[in-house]
Image (cartoon, rainbow, N blue to C red; front, side, top):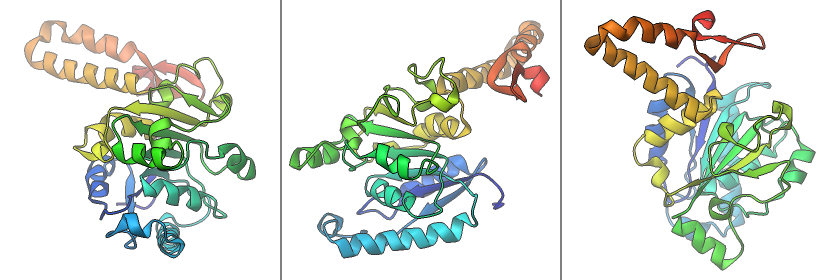
Length: 273
């Protein structure tokens, strides 16, 4: 895989060898270079070791070293997917000088819901472009963690000022609260809901293919679904409805999408191609 391709980095949680990282890699690698970051310190007895500062430090050091080796020089901004304890490692990684990320997905995050993103971004406003926090409504692990201490982002969502955090229940680029706003004033962090348990995100590739992939491309998911469905319809018409195929193709090429742009102007698909 060529190193000049856009990069997605993945981070697993505790009691895991990160098998899901290889699964989502199959979805992303035709389009991105996908790098799984792994650390051995929490593969076994993770719930006991999680309270050990020494183990957390060693895991962070391992991840930071591998991140630096894989990402390369300054100016490279990878996307990131982090699960569970991987989200804790991710925010520590972001606080290290020179770490810059593009789009971030957090799933099953044990970070406190009141994590101080305002201060974090004030200290380093270029740490990332935007972040989607997927909270699992059926996540018993994060629910238990919240009952034992304080609300967790993986279930309650991140909380903070509305100009920074939106609680939209939909994927990031479809946020109704950001419609009509110029990109510079979009909220940087979005909480979205999923009816998932702690590791259900990685059962099959449907979630990563249908939601994460268009998110990293910057496409609104409903527009992505519509585009795919129209392509499938045209393919079906080519064998079953040749009479109406030509008009359907012309209509398809005449339509514009959010990504069919030449400079700043939105143009039709035909003009874009």
